[in-house]
Image 1 (cartoon, helix red, strand yellow):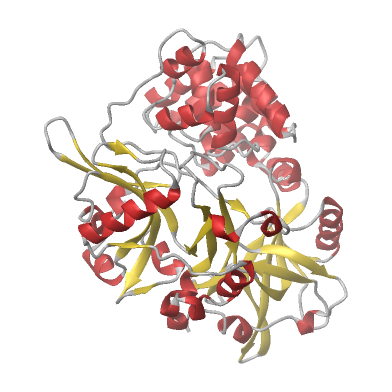
Image 2 (tube, rainbow, N blue to C red):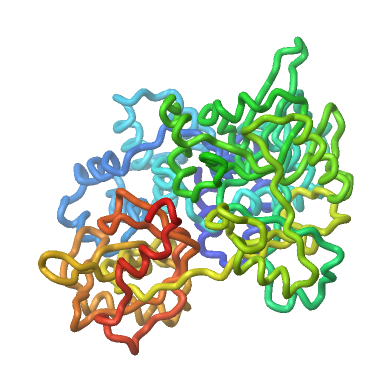
Length: 546
C-alpha cells in the first residue's frame, strides 16, 4: 500500500503527460504481482471494491476527533480523503509494516458490511498520512489523479515495448490482477488470448477539426457523415462453440450494456460487429439525447419504456462479418459492405447513417451549420455536426491524427449569473472553481434567478484566482463546501456560458439542463440585470420539448 500511495501521490502532483507515463512505468517495473495488477485496476477504474459511503468515513473520524474541528477542517480543505488522512490521530506504539495493496483488496473483499467500519478504522490506524489518503480514495470511489484508462494502457505499451492496439485488443478479456498481461509484457509468456466469440473491438476515434486543418486537406479524399447526438456503441452478434447465439451491445469503452437494451439485442441475429450510434427513434424521427438518457444506466427496463423510448442504431461501420475481420480494409470498401449488410439484414432497429453530399469545404460548412436543409430534415435537432473520414483509412484503434475528424456545430452561448460556488478537487481543492449559474424567470414576486447548469472549466488559472476571490468576498450563505454568492438585479457576476444543447430536467428548478457547459468568458463589465432569461433558453429546446 505504501508504494501504491506514493505512486498516486506523485501522479496527482505531476502535470505533464510524459511525467505520468514515466511514473507508472517505474512502478510496474519495480512492483511485484499481484500488487501492480491491482494498482493497474485502480488506475483504470476496474477495481471492483465494496465502496464505503462518505457518511461512514465521516462517522468514523468524528469518533476519533472533535466533530466541530473535523467539519471546520473539511470545509477548509474541501476533500474528504485529504481531510481525514491529515486529521486522523496516529495511535501510540509501532503499527508495524503497512499492508500491501493486494492484502487490502483481499480484506475488503472478504469483510461483510457489519464488520466494515472496524476494518476501515483499523487500516487507517496502520497507515501513514499518504497511505490513508490513498486508501480512502480507493474505497470512496474515483482517484481523480489525471490518469485516463488510455494513458495507463499507453504506459503499459511503452514499458513492455508493445503496440497499444495489441493491448486494446485483449484488454476486455482480462481481469485484475492481470498476471498474464504482465507476464506477456515482460516477455515471460505469450500474449493472452481471448476465446470469447463476441469480443469488444477497440473503437477508432476522430480528432476535433482545428482551424486551419481544412487548408491541409483535400475534400475529394473524404466522406462526410452526420455526427449524431447519442452514444457510440458496438453491436456484436455471434455463436458459441455449441451454436448458441450470443448478442452483446458494448459502449465506446467496452462496457457491456446489453441488459438495458433488449430491443436492440433482438436485432442482433447475425454474425457481425457493427460500429454505430445508439439513439432513440420515435415514429421515424431521431429524438434528442435527453430521450436516450432515460434508457441509460438502468439495471432493468420496463415494457412501457421500451414502447415509449425505442432504441435504435445508426450504423457507421462494419468491423467483422461472418468470421472475416474487415478492419484492415479501406473505409470506402467497408462502407460498401456495410450498406449491403444493412439492406440485407432489414431490421427496423438498425439503419444506415447517411453520408452528407458536399462539393467543397464551404458547402460542407453550410451543411454543418444548417443540417435540416442539407438532408437531415426532421432529425436536424439530433445532429451535433459532421464527421470526416478518409476514403482510404483502415480502422485503427485509438485516435490517430489524420484519418478521421469531427467538426462539431458551433456551441450555443448564454449570459448567466453565478449563484453558487463549490471547491474543486485535486490541486483545485482549496479554490472555489465549480460554479452553478442561473438565468432570470418571471414569478409571482417578480424576476428570480433559476439555476440552469454548472461549469468547472473554460477559464485560466489567473481568472480562477480572481473568481475565487469574488466568491469569498461576496458569500451570503454556506452549505458545507458550497457557498451561495450574492446575485440580484443590482449586483452579481455574469458568466458567458458555452454549451452543446438543452434538455428537459426534473432536477433543476428551471426545468432545463445544459449539455457540456463551460465558461466562455467572464463578463466583469456587464450588470447582472442584463443576463439572459429562461424564455431565451426555452427557444433553444428541441421542438418536441418546447
